[in-house]
Length: 251
Length: 353
Ligand SMILES: Cc1ncc(C[n+]2csc(CCOP(=O)(O)OP(=O)(O)O)c2C)c(N)n1
Ligand code: SF4
Ligand SMILES: [Mg+2]
Image (cartoon, rainbow over all chains, first blue to last red; front, side, top):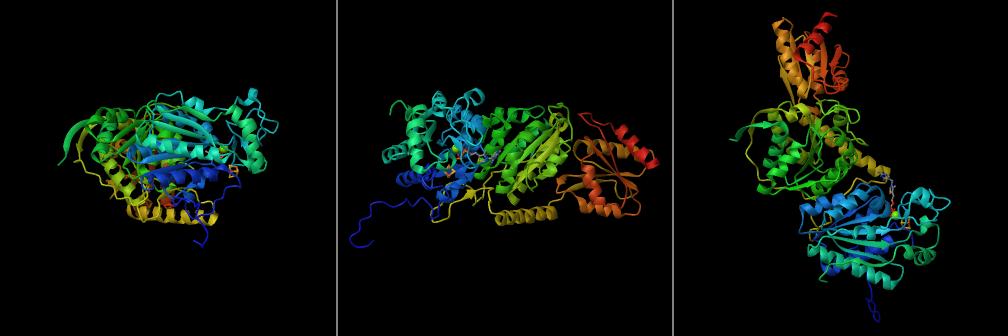
């Protein structure tokens, strides 16, 4: 450290020395960092096993310095189930986009939650299929334009966006559900706290834990990172309110 | 050594898996295979394995990927429509090189088809089945005893080659009862340093993937996989011969139809026709070299492939024989089991022509 300088921040050692491929301003990168900070703080790097999805975060194993498996599109919850059932003493998470978790993989999501699979879902809801170039997702907002809803999502044809926190918090077997975001430093800190709580509840064996990150996709939304933050606040949060939907009773 | 019992094929398979050190079973009910998961459910309290009835075959195969990737000895069983649903997952498993065992207790198709026994999933089992270039190690039992033996062998080969292995059986073998000798249980100790069991201190993390986005890397991965498949082809071919030494006519048949064909060989011999049976036990790797040797024998007039399908293995027989001798086919479809007499008649018709 240079004389006269004080270290006030460094990236967690649980993130690998690899330049991320995410677009500037994308919350995938922020969320990875928050998760790995939690892993470092809890000292669980050797006890945690992750599953990454098909979606922009398909390469998450390149960044997170923990054991990981890359799942087929939509199947991360089933893969996480397989891992956790074999290693109930380990901490397991699935990291999934909205296409992955709420469209092609919704059966696996619902059934894993209903069985109370004791792992943590980190659900990146950016309202779009980022990886494939910005098509409509099950979470795309009413009227939102995407490459497959060029005139805006029409609920008559496509239904209304799926509210996953609201859905999964109905299961008795789900212990903890919170929707967070990273649009401000304060919200990012809240998101980190939520991730930490989820891992802790998992370690206590309380049941499924589900963290939704109301996320952005500047590239898919065809806007600047700053505009994406505006959109979140004005359009997304009213429909996808942030907050705790469910938490363990005694806590 | 072992224990002798009268058992149904599917139950024997389940019992063998337990004795072979099964740690995780993930499956979805389907006739004519459901006895496997039912048996495992009954026996569960006595053992340590995890049994999970999945929400679908799609989920089951991906649970297998997770559990097998995390180092456990794992199995799933299904029948034809369910095996179709598993194909995407199997392709991922083959590329990520996760040892695990499948059993397809085949029923007649296409579509929802029939619950009667069939061999119409031969192509799907032996040619890969899902997308991309890969193979599973495919064992074709023809008795309840082999349902047991092949479970042990399948698990062993899966571990040895870090590869998915499977039993290509059928509804008749799954449902019939026979005397079996059950091997002694083994204590399974996985030795899988690549598995995702949590990062080891001072070591690189383990990750399992089938994603190689640069074509050069993807080609390299394919070369690695192909080298493994070649090694399997060189070392793991298994077959059985019955009265082929002096045979002029060679029946080639696997699984259930090979059992019936054996009877036809005896009937043919009684009628003065020198027929022999060649039975691939591994349908992949296919015993092509051995068939080529037999085709080179002077006294051999022709081959006839007997299958319970529209003619699938016959293509592999033709490739092996490579034009040296005629190769014919006779089969029944849709869940019909041919009789020994019917097969004999088909053989006689060819020998006259
Ligand atoms: C079986 C299958 N169908 C379709 C695809 C193509 N595909 C890849 S990623 C993706 C959508 C990803 O969107 P999302 O899950 O929201 O993740 P994001 O990229 O937005 O983070 C699709 C449809 C695939 N890889 N596999
Ligand atoms: S396409 Fe969207 S989700 Fe993907 S990295 Fe870029 S901004 Fe993030
Ligand atoms: Mg998305």
